[in-house]
Image 1 (cartoon, rainbow, N blue to C red):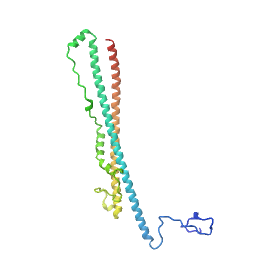
Image 2 (image 1 turned 45 degrees about the horizontal axis):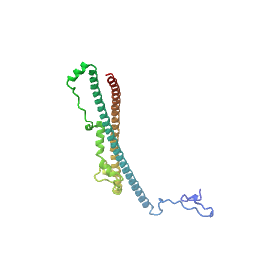
Image 3 (image 1 turned 135 degrees about the horizontal axis):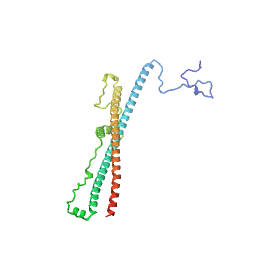
Image 4 (image 1 turned 90 degrees about the horizontal axis):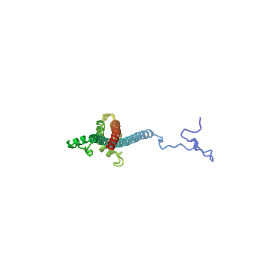
Length: 258
């Protein structure tokens, strides 16, 4: 058996005074001994539960703010993808118009090769040309899945403004948002009003986090579909540009032969 009680620190010996008893091991959370110890312990446990509930509520609030911020970034990225789609579609229409004009030019060159063909072409009515399309009026739209995801997420803008730490300081003293409900019955919460408020706040945050993660998933899937569709447009555009380049070189050779 050790000569020292368990509440003493054996590493606190002083070499100069070997006969002195070691100093007790002190812990700020040690509870006092005596007849009031059970009441003090219960009070401490209640305060500890309340403190942990408060910390959990604050943590879920921060997570919720980060989720809203991620959703805002996702919406901005989706809108940029929609803008890029518009650029690709306008470029494709311009290439189609150039190809159409080049075909008309090739017909004129072929008819000019003979004098008779040139005279006939002179007295013929001018071929009807389709008017050039106004590229600036083209409004491009993303795929329906991404469009719906953007619209749904934009409806959460007010919540993002309310939860952003730089726009609103969260007040942990009143953790339950007014008007916020939970699917759980109020009988399932603790009777302590402060602890009940923290539990309701945690449940509310977790419910909103679950819905927010679902919206983020919809945005990610919509962006994936949009990227795949834009890849198809880009491949189609590359093929048209290569074909147009070959036709331009062919037209140049015919012009030199006139």
